[in-house]
Length: 263
Image 1 (cartoon, rainbow, N blue to C red):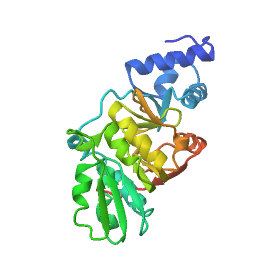
Image 2: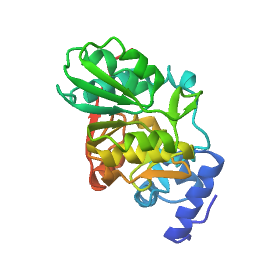
Image 3: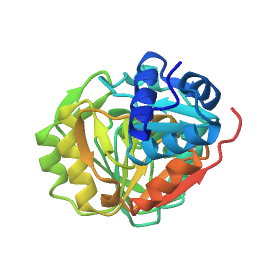
């Protein structure tokens, strides 16, 4: 058991050490291991969360995880489906007739397709092959596929050539996906080839919007895409913790937390 005589910085360093061995720790576990009060542990955890070094959970603390690689589209397709559908429904409410919209690659954004069936005079711009295919039969949408190198695992185009094409367009709305996000580090990706395209979409849009479920919050990858304050809105699910939600809003972005219907 750790001595109660540790100063606050030493206690917080010990919390980080404990999380390296067990990535999620309850307040009760930390209280026992550190030999301090419940309130002391909560204050230390809150300070570490403010610094972006841990993520608060219901009843405890979780390590901020580094994302080394992005899972394939096949893996992502069946994960958190109710939350993704709820996020897509909220995003569909932003779509108006006559808009030029960028749809980033991802299963959440692809699920938007049936929700905009009645919208007219749309211009859909996308780097996602499955999304482009889904819009082929939309009578009210012109379709622009952003060319470039194909990422076969995620069925999308990436790289400088794709970004150069997108740079020639002016967008009303950009719906952006990501594998990892948090208040301090913003949007990150483990795939360098995705950076330019996402950054170009954000800068080209009057309203850039991130669509990301709460399970991706608090993780990070080595390549930074954008700060949260470069976005207009973040749409996520209601499972995002209150403290995390407050930090996102403090970063200067509108936050929408939506409720998922049971699968």
